[in-house]
Image (cartoon, rainbow, N blue to C red; front, side, top):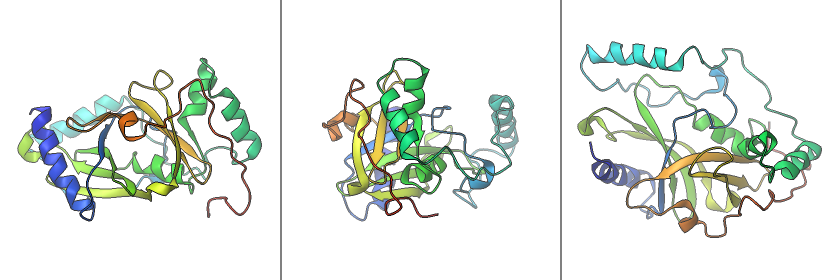
Length: 240
């Protein structure tokens, strides 16, 4: 199926979740291991429940076996993890100083910071869900919100983007800054910084017919500029 045909179906489906507001940006989130820290299985949200894997009765078990082999044993932990990393000013400042480094420290600093309860922590979980059906994750931008849309997928156009579900949504005012993460994590990578002091980088490609990320966010910081400073206090700490 062509990318243009996919884009048309995606545009129609996405419009069902915007409350009549225009879709300004639509990005296909890359399916790779750069979606933040690995989310333990108990924390992964269930999505598209009750939806069956598209395809014939014979094709479904074959696709499941292919998924099993494709992961090569890299399955999420079955044991829950109560924290991601220290939520302290010292740790945040360390990562901020490393954010312009070309070494592995620079990559680590770009990836994610914030506890599970932070805005970025909820985004990490949203882009690593579990489902019994094929799906793709898309980041949707409107004038007043950002959200992740889980879209049922399939090998054929008739099975693609018939069903969707919102898994994460924030008011656009909660996005404090954006930063270029290309070459640090993945092509078309961008960093999202939030008003609670957390951040996360996402690799995502614009859907045909929609602008590049910097077209929507022209104030995006270059890689040569550090992550903005922030002071963590009890008042602005994410609720636990």
